[in-house]
Image 1 (cartoon, rainbow, N blue to C red):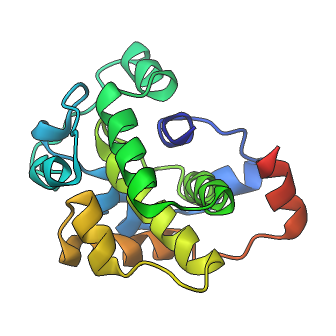
Image 2: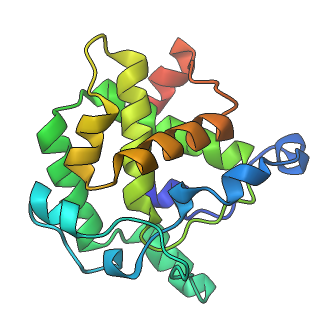
Length: 186
């Protein structure tokens, strides 16, 4: 679902949301960047492997070259991403509610910032930040940014920067009404 939302080019946005000016800072955010070592198929197998699997941004990110490639990214998550998410969710033991809310945050980020184009490999970083923010919003006892950094292998300064950029991309609007939450849970 993360890849479906992130690599989507049209989420059925109402006209007024499509025409709304986006956040220019978010389009340059580190959330949407990746490095060549986090390409599809390079599956990290443990937390220490995740740390070594340079999820940091690079100067020349991989860009989808065609609509077919974008559809592949959207509908077929890489084995590396599946393994990464499995490790992340096992390590954090997040609730279903946190996962649902994180998906809604990604959806909302794309709606508010239609100019953001997810690059191959950026889903790793996006998942970490969305889960981190949902955990902070819903749970009383949450993981620190340092813990998220250690689990994901993303440096603490980058985690902090991506958190600020993600919040800015959502206009700091983390609240979700109960009806919307219920619909997302179905």
